Length: 246
Image (tube, rainbow, N blue to C red; front, side):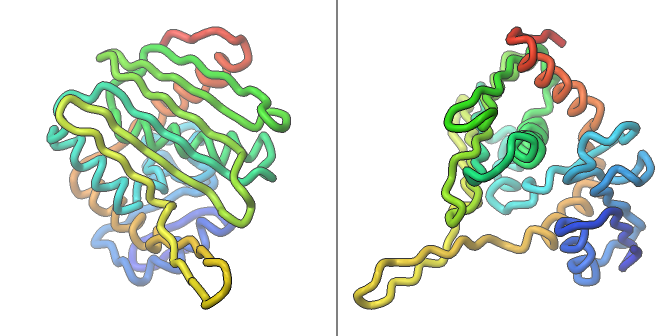
């Protein structure tokens, strides 16, 4: 579908949401966003297309959160001093299947962490244990060539009524940055009744389109092959129980 110079491939909530937002975020030049792996190598991959073979660049959907975007900007500008570590936690509801936890929980988190820390990854160690039910957790440790440690966890553990949770924390020489963009909520407190929490955050579809425009104009691009290599190493490490050196 073409709208205001946007071509967005795929079906499902992500593609539909981006198409609905496209008329409100016009682009001066044609841009293709691939959500299903069907577009050419020059498309911006996101969602389930993150690992599509032959692609050359990607943009994490959650990078569009205002708090996460500000965190990355601060790191990129060097305002934090030397970065020592990144901690990321993505928690989905308890009824999430093992396959969905890997695809919808761990993969977006890994893509986001590699978006924040662009240093090449040198060593990967991962486990996929069963805490409450089979394979309901991922614990991943990535060490980069400059000795930055990325510690990531994806868990199927939250109440279905509570929804997902995302935390990104960067520890550096001069600052510690923390973003919890999914913790925003509208709280309703009826008289004599328990308070009700309704999760709320900004429209990520419009923000994501703006993010892609800004990155294209700035010449920023993430290497999809780097993401695929790290992802394959995560799977290999979890299967063997041994670290993988890249």
